[in-house]
Amino acid sequence: MSLRIIVLLAVLTGTIGSPRPEADSADMKAHPNSVPETAEKTKSFVQQEVLVVEKAEENVMATGELNVNHYPARRAAQVVQHYLNTRYGSPYRLLQVDKVHRGNAEDVADSGRKYKLEISVMDFISNITDKCSAEILFPRGEQQRSPQVQALCEEPLKINTKAQEEALYQQYKMNSSLLSAQYLPDSYGHIEPDMKPFWHLSIVAASFIMLNESSEDTLYNVAQVANITQLATENDQLKFDCHVLLHEMVSQEIIHWKLLFTWSPPDGVKVLQMEQLPHRHEGEKPPNTN
Image 1 (spheres, rainbow, N blue to C red):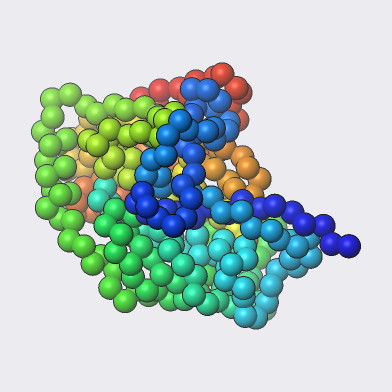
Image 2: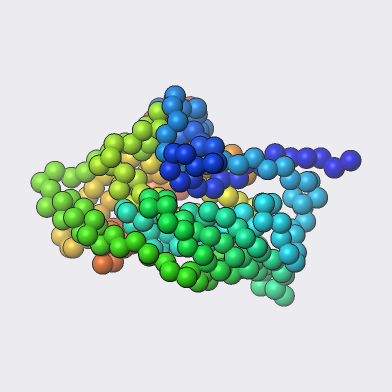
């Protein structure tokens, strides 16, 4: 008799009213290593689906045509999402996998396993959907290496966000005081409107980590931005120190990372440093990263 295992898969949700149920946000003040319940329903970047997976499927990766609702296709699609955000993400553009239409997987000699997917990608902010085809190669070897991704979208960047980005850049470039914020979202799932662009920006920066750390056995999402601090800079880039909490949905681990990154409208997000922080204990507050 096969043993059935519950696996939580993270996908991204759109606005309130989406047919998919919304997930709770992380309350780091209550428990820095778990994602707690929220007191109200809010628009959330993280949504969870529960899928039942056979033990045999856990031990043997599917080859050939994939069931688009099972975890191999969903995990590979999530890697494409991280990849697209590292290339196209901004304070006003955040991409999410809306649907996997079809997919297949094959072993590629000694180099690894290749997935080919047809997916729909939606901008979390505008809700505009685009179709993409992608190839994802998960390398083999004793030492984990980041997946190799190629993606072709029909019309990426459909929404012109240049004016919004330039206005945000000029505001914080000219401010006499530097930005500092904590707990995005807070324990009730709330984010102040003027902080939402920096929540989005932190998720884009964290996508570089999630892409680098992903494998066939992982599924990453951002649980919370514990804090983000703007740093002084003498060049044309806005510079940020950021502490993010990543939710690895398979192991149910909350993993803390510190990021140093820059952003400007013409150059996008550039990650200068990323460091995994030690596992935190209950009741322990995340440190200020400045």
